[in-house]
Length: 238
Image (cartoon, rainbow, N blue to C red; front, side, top):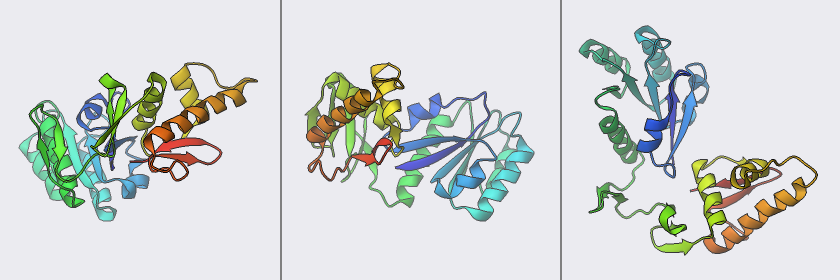
């Protein structure tokens, strides 16, 4: 799992990055320029987007501060990049600089390939259907929406009910994050949680996780994929 920090302003969104980075292998963390300095040591890569708030001067200062203390890869994204700007960012320690309009998809793929090499992962190939496949490595859980199923470690496909698939999909959207019983219930059943029947609603969530584990885990008592977060809820670990 790669942790990618996105240093953005409020008017920007993450849709482009969500399309480019698979949710099961990349966890996106939207950050302000103030927040990034506190969590950069937990990030594998940082993407800094220039804006009216984060201009050339402030971007340079941020790159310098990050490079003094952290080893995360730094990518700068900006509209209408000039050659001079690119040279300045690279000289200050940025690992990549791209023009937002023309190069984003290509550069983000370069970033992913670089992360794989740094972490010593097997290289990937593209199969005849245009889908990335890593050599000698399988994604622990692959969601197959058309079949309402999951493939475990690239080998075994497990059929799920519609509700089970919705829960595992919701957990996958927040891989590595503990989700409360309330969050899971409200997002899956589309009902409020906090009333006199909340105990029954928590049981419904627990019961569905129990059935999911029976299908996905080799040993339900020692789950590999869906972890219990005591007194809070559940977390998908892949």
